Structure formats: structure tokens, C-alpha cells
Length: 439
Figure 1 (cartoon, rainbow, N blue to C red):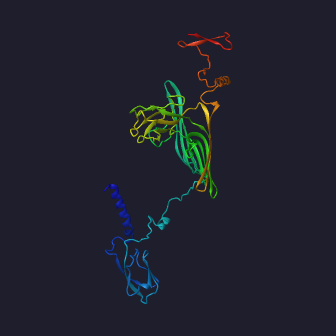
Figure 2: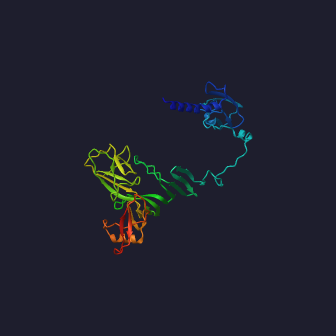
């Protein structure tokens, strides 16, 4: 028997025996629970004892049982027909405690007369008292706030900041709010070696009420109910969904979303080697090697079967190096058909996503679903580079010819030994200029 189990038994035993000790004065605990007392009959009610009486143990001789009634818990006897004598003898047996005893640590009268502490004022939260550095009222707030100064012998002072805040609670009396706000200089991708991920860099704001829900910030859209429109996207934007009962047999569900994609979707078919569990390097849509996979967006299929992520499951993945390794639970051969779908960070152009879903439930036997999804690049809204009108016109005239996508450009630089520089010539070449090597 463990020590924890012995302590539990001891506490239970003390709890069961303590009420009996409270009912009987020390030194007067009877050996037997049989009591025989003589009472004077002065009213229709007799208080027999301070403990509860065992049923069917009361004997009043020579009074018949139909002439009295008994409250066993409170040990109280009621006369239906009062005896003609002035006193009577009653024998009974009692429990070692009172069944409905009230236990209190201190008596109210002693507290009322001997309480000398200055009276206090209860604050129900309606005041404007400041709680800590930030005051969010009735909302529960958790997080961290930090500032860091870094300097060295070959660099200036640098100020780094971190701010993480999680909010949850009620706005008013009906709107539930949940929020996560993160402001870090270096976002961190979680490790892909567990089935459940703890994401470090996620900013979202959620409002919820009966019948509707509004999400802002980092949102996940998953559509797997329709055969013709099935997708999973990690986005930044806004989504609103509502559920309404139009009539007794008609219920409507609506979802509207407008957002910007955090990455680009692609699919890889791996060329596996006999007995090689990995790591296998993934490639982007344009055969890129160095990119970051968006966490929890990958779907890995082995011979058409969807695999599970985790060290104790089928595979692990490194999101920062875009490498996937299979566990011994899933042995890889040269004939294995492995397909990996994922999203990776590629923000060359502003990628807009619009999604509309409408579902009607008619009774319990008919469901109608309508979905519309649009994903397009804003070609005039580049992110990583800024192009002037002449460069945009040059790209427009290229068409699909990637081999001709070389735009001549030159910048002015200062002379320094060891640099390979060119000299601009003013000779007319039909609208252009000539660069001659100058070293």
C-alpha cells in the first residue's frame, strides 16, 4: 500500500469520527449506545437526545406505537395521544453522531462580539482601480513584455522588443472574446516532431456570440465537406460565420472570408531510395531549395494513405530547412509512392483569397451546399521589389518567354581598388549606351 493511500484512509477515518467527538463531552463517552431516560410530560414534544436515534430501537412501555411519532434524525418525539402520567421512561439506541449536524469553525456570536479588525469595503470590480501595469477590466490577461539593449565593440546599440499578450473573457454580458497578440523581432517556427504544435507567432482576435463568430488576424480555413471544393489554407484577414434557423425545418449556415495568403501551395512527389528513411529535401513550385514551410500545412501521403506527424507516428518534418524524415513505423523502399502537399513562405506578390460558403439543411434528410473560392495575385502590388513603369512594360512584352527576362541596369559606384567597374560611353547605339570595362 502506497503512502498516499494510507494518508487518504486516515483523513477519512478522522472525518467520520470527528462529529461524534463534537457531540459528546470528553470523559463522558458511553460504552454502549443504549440509552434509558425518564422524561416529564409537559408538552406534546420531547427532545430525547442530541444524537440521531437508530430506527426501530425505541421502546416506550406501556405506551402503544400508534400513540406517538418519532423524528429519528433530530431525536424528537411527538405525542399523538398524550399519556395520563406525569413522567415516562423511554429506552433507545443512538448513532455516534448526528446525521444533519452543522459544523462551523467558529460561532457567529463570538465573531460578532470579538471582531476588532477595521471593517473593509468589498470591491466588485466596478471601480477604476489599476491592476498591475495594464488594466483590462473583467478580461483575463496573460503574457510577457520585454525590452533588450544589445551593443558591442563593432556595432551600435540595438533595441530589441518582445510582446506577447493573451486575452480571454466576456465583453458586456453576451460577447465572448479571445485574442493573441505577438510582437517579436524574430518569429519562430515550431518543431514538426509532435502531433500537436505550439505556435509561437500567431496574432488573432476572435469575437463569439450565440449564432455568429468573427475572426480577425491569422485564421485557418478548412473545407473538407464538399467533394468538389476541398482545401486548407493559412491566411491573414477576416472571416465571419453565422448560423440561423429560418423555420422549423430549415437551417442556414453562412461563411464569408477575405484574406491574404501567407504562402504558396505546392505538391512534391518524392523519389525514394531503398531503405533510406530520410531526410528528403522538399522543393518549391519553381524548384526553390531554400524556403520555410508554414507550420501545420503539410499533408503527406504514402501509397495513397494519409500519414500522421510525430516521433511516435509516421514522420517528422523540419519546417525551417524543408526536410522530411520518416520513422521506422513507415519503412521506405524504392517502390514507395510518397506525395507531400504543403505551403511555404513566398510573398513576391500580394495574394488575395475570397471565399463564400452557404449551407442549407432542409429537415434531416437533405443538405444543400454552395461554395465559391477565388485565389489570385495582384500583379501590380509586388512585395519584395518595386518596379517602375518602364520595367513593368518590359515584363508585359515578354509574355511566356523566361529566357528573355533580362533587364539591363547600371548604378553609379565610387572607385575602389579591387572592384570591377564599367565606364559609360556616350556613343549612339540606337537608343542605348555602351559600357566598357574599366579596371
